[in-house]
Image 1 (cartoon, rainbow, N blue to C red):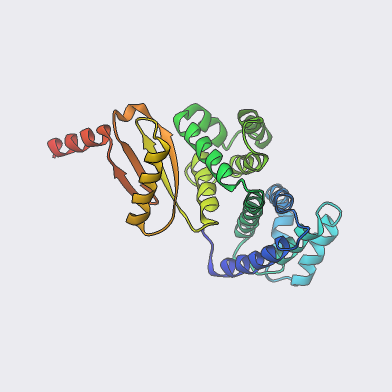
Image 2 (cartoon, rainbow, N blue to C red):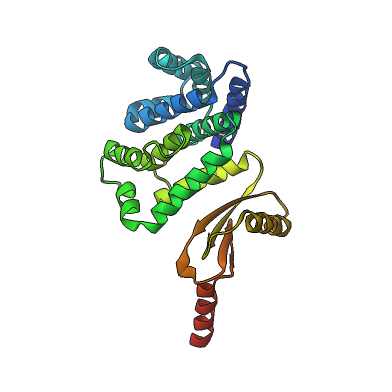
Length: 273
């Protein structure tokens, strides 16, 4: 997510409000997250409302009153408090306000997963879904098609995950489908994987292996990567037998290719040069 200076300050303020709201003993982070994402859907559909709540030249209190009047009966007090914090700040443009609100919704959902002790499971489910999309171009194309009706794509996403994933994972995937950003839906889901890992200050290592890795091999690889990158690592492994042997590791923009296919490709490049 790319934000200009004013939007970064606005998001920082709203994140503080969100942390305070979720810190209350009776707060349900997952419910707050779903409510905030429902407002993202509303603002995405309603251009006039989106412009009104992001108009930095208007009175901040008037903007807060507007959302309170419209949504008081539809949102819980915690979610409305966060939304008022969002619209009360100055954002660089309407799109960045909606992006910031979406980020807050994601953060609340992941906080809910963390509170329930299932953050790692949600993170891995997101990773595996992104790999399915990468390996199935026609499916990725259907979900990324900007001309297709939003509800049709949402329905397809629900059909794909059904009851196979945690409800929080399902909501996150649906949002990545209906508001795709970046190069593909898979790319957007991978951003959610990074956001989940970031809650414990871990870097995501995307590992593609030619063979299944044992628990011992995974632990050893994670330890090696942590020493190399000098930070905790969230290790996610996908199987790809076309590699022939070995594995490929991606951490951010860094790629470590120890596969047979990678070595053959490197040799071909050398011979061609």
